[in-house]
Amino acid sequence: MSDEEWRWWVGHSEERYHTECDTREEAVRIATEEQDGGWICEAIKPDNLLLSGFFRADRFVEDAEEWAYEDYGDPEGNQPLFEVSPDDLKELDAAVRQVIDAWQQESGLTFTSWQFSKMRNEEYVPAREETPPPVETQ
Image (cartoon, rainbow, N blue to C red; front, top):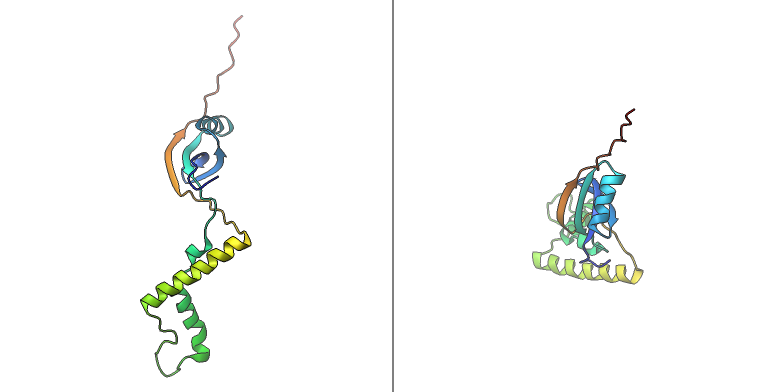
């Protein structure tokens, strides 16, 4: 499935969808016959999350400062060990993200998301009413 392939999904609530379907008709059938009604929607689920998107150079430098300060910091001063300019942080961020992307690709790592990147056509479909058996008259 590509990043731009719309698929139908079924869920017990509009906050969590659990079953992927090929068509709207299949989603409606599952919601009405296999569940007691449910939510359906058309959505795109990303194939692969890039781990690099979760790297933040500013957090890395903050963590490094905290970890190193006890052993390397000035106990009588308040000078940071790792003073990095905003421009340098941007460069570090881009460089590390590039390395993470290459590593992820070379390692063949795929990280799947449970959250949709896009949604449309969300609706509630009630359970199909059961037809009562015919009443026999004598």
